[in-house]
Length: 343
Picture (cartoon, one colour):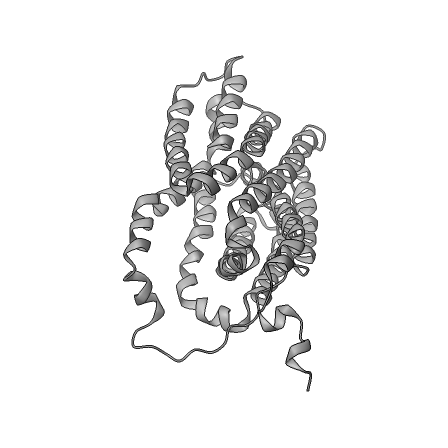
């Protein structure tokens, strides 16, 4: 049997801060590749415009998007099992499997031609549901893992640098997508972009293999009450939940998914212009992220959070007042997109 003293740090769970810092670049690459995957698949305007191109009703599009946060309800019930299995192992397995599931979207145009809209919708719904479940399990593993990955004193800067890398990768992909949408005909322009996103997703998993930590948790003796009840007795945690209004922020993020359809149908922007709005938002976030991270490390997270929440309130007001089907529609929408990136 191998000597425990010679086992790698991932196995023992004992990792020095110096080792964590040395391997943080793999985390930046991992998240940048994941950002490229996300914006070209489920979390960017490409996916919404793809569903619109398929001719799906808005009610069906809303149902598909609702599956993403709904599957997150499994997290409290699976967290102990995920910790025992090892958060790194569970995360990478789920993150890899969901890329294979996403590839099922490439079959949708063929199913639409052969079986009609009903069958195409069922395929998309199955893909989204499986993706959402894998995402929920993977994120349950990711959050404790990233707490272990990053030294406490460096978390603000890590978040900022990671955000910059992710936004840069996402911006480059979206800029390329805006070019492709003008030059590839029909629904194949969307499947080509989704295929590129899937490849970036598999690259994301390969980078994740290089990240340390995430060893299986040691079995713990059961206490007098389930851990979930202990969390609910934590007054500071409950104040945090109320203060940030996390549920309302989730609703906000889901409603934001319909902005591309609003811009296309109500404002009159082209698909290329809609993609460029996201590029502007990403680039402005890229420029401002490090400053927000620096401020969070020096002044605390609360002032940054307050500014962000206040800024988010301005966006729907701006969208409701912007000119429709006018030469100024795109410049005003782009200015709001830049402001959203900073927020």
